[in-house]
Length: 182
Image (tube, rainbow, N blue to C red):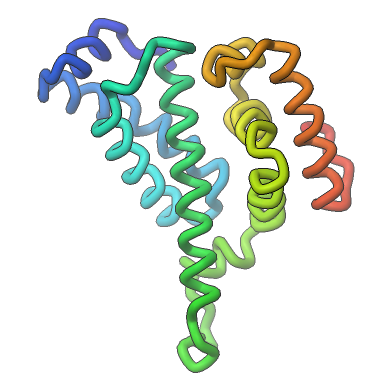
């Protein structure tokens, strides 16, 4: 998806109509990015709304380093990971008395969802190798090209590739399987 640079500039300059138009234009892409990490639609929508709010309030922070949609992807990915951590923490804080015999789809989607192992592996990777985690999410989850990741992170292309290699090995070890994309 390409967003008109003039629209971004007008929104950055404080034009409320341009900001509304920009957020409307990028919303589907933000939701898709969040849904790649969060298996339940309501969780992805929550993360998407948080990401759109962050984009609106921090639009002035976009420096033009890398593409605008790459910057949006970073925010959406971070928002999805934060939503996952929040939901996981809320689930862990619940007492056994509060747990229902009927699973709540909001918690089971995250706690027992198909992406749980990957999200846990990314969380562990983030603690062990923060720069590698960011590069991994941008490449293997968000599908950004290496050059775009280098521009967004300010790291040389070779460093980005090395970080992704490190991350893939780490994630493979955590998942206990060999996956072609990793």
